[in-house]
Image (spheres, rainbow, N blue to C red):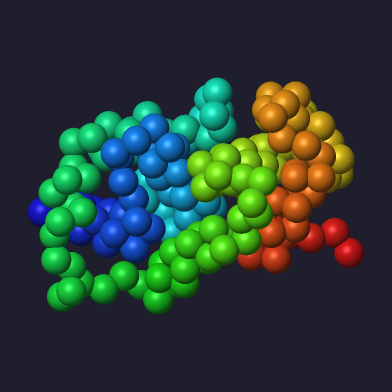
Length: 165
């Protein structure tokens, strides 16, 4: 097992990554996107897909390696302190989930908002929150402006986006 596999294994365990159901795989995609957005780069590139940011390479890696990585004992390995902090931050987002979301829909909204926010120029939108929400709702009409605002505030409070003063 190489260092990348060890790092992925620790991260996947700490984020409770699973590939058992579609929702589990969707949550995995979004959690890893969020984690990488904080600077813990695992090397996965993302593009926009029907359910928001998606990395085909992450899916392939999960199917090939998750069973072995999930069962391995990493007690003699350590991640950098900042990586541990970022993992806690991503996991903490679930505590902010309201009852009008499933875990999958919550992480999909968070990651999708952040993806559009991080790629404003290619989406041809300005820096206004309203533009971000309108764009997201255009592609994901299941979300309301109020839900977008709530998710944006959660992302801001967690340090993913700059809050307007």
